[in-house]
Length: 591
Image 1 (cartoon, one colour):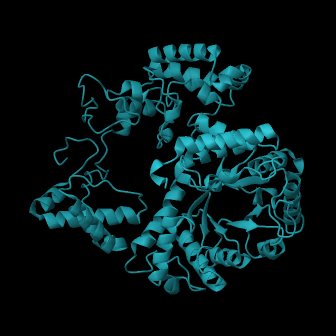
Image 2 (tube, helix red, strand yellow; image 1 turned 120 degrees about the horizontal axis):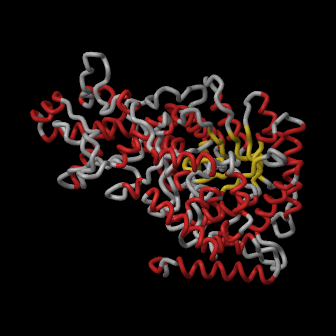
Image 3 (cartoon, rainbow, N blue to C red; image 1 turned 90 degrees about the vertical axis):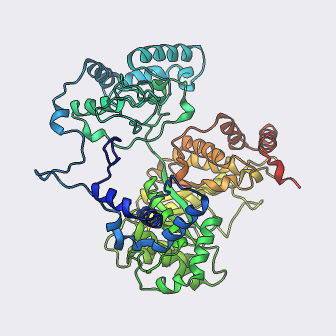
């Protein structure tokens, strides 16, 4: 690295000299400083290589925790930048803008740009007509049948000749300026360069071959499309060996519009690891020191000279959810405090301030079954904060709306309307679809008519019941999941609810299932989104709504979605659950 033999890696003379005179203990201390730095900056993890043994790893991690946010006081130990050139320019770039821009676009690029511009740019030119025509053939949209195989075979042959296509099914030719990284890379990497390329841009494994990343760079510069050189999402592996063109046109690949409003659930006290971190904060007395009413948490979480690992962990949960596209950061502390409402209010204030300090403007979703705790969190979001984005309140019910909705006059907010009512439930303790719709209308009309909420400020939650208990005692009545989904369908179809959002706490659906819970959530969400759901409380790290669900899990969830009370539908649901449990039971858990 010091000799400039590895592109992208730089070791200055000063750093090289420092390393030569240091002892192993100094190297470990520098490694710990870097771990502390990355943790403080919000990284989810670090790669520690070249360690002699596991004990050394533990030393580094323990030292990093001791350092905490104080790494900034010693940044000189980490910062060995190159000297600027005599012209004042930064010396770190291999290419000059002049050399790149002088290269003309190749025939290969022009040919690809012409095809894509005229036939595959969504909403423009011939693309809408082509998509509409292809949708006439249902087997193409389903991805099966003879016609689909013929289309896929012809596409694969043509793209193999033109672009060295590897048939990944999730094509990045547009983002990579007409180059297939899988086919044109010696190693078949999806995201070159790998680090083996020479400074001249040749492949480290095959000196006769130009690194495809080199070609992409010059193609981007020649196309004057440098602004498209953004980090790319991972390929969807499940689409391999399928038609990339049809996946693109039918919104199945990585370009599909992210229509789901994700409410990140990782700061919910029902999650064991989150609860354990919250408990450590309580045990260390941080709630009393920073969660008292009136004291802002905006002091660099940095309020404490030594930040405990638990606080670091919770801050990292906030930052990673923001990074992964959460529209709101949910926080719920109802598992603490028992009947001590003042304790829970103070705890909610503490975590709302923590979110406000580290969410980069992404608003909080204040989540509680107590109206008092909801109001405390709402007030904490607005104290000393200027004009932050309106938070989300989870949840407002028909019997709490007169207590909560008037707060909008002081604290603008949006809310999740949960369709439950203490005073009137169905005879079996569960609402029918008509009753759920009545509750939705009451919430919607009161909020928009009396308190001035816009339709888009309202998220209707028709409640999620675990699939594991979704076998009605009265076989003639529809199942819980059927009622939830049918309510979504009917609200979406009713013009009176135009503009309202539909939301669910999807994770509740997999409670007590023996396995594949993330996959079942993915399938459950896909079915709900097909009916009009556009928001959900989820673990945003799982990319819900972006990856296709497994076909067998779609069929599993479908059995409960269609459990309309007929004997055949009930039996299908029972059979589906029995089959799922047999296939996913963990023998080690049987007693």
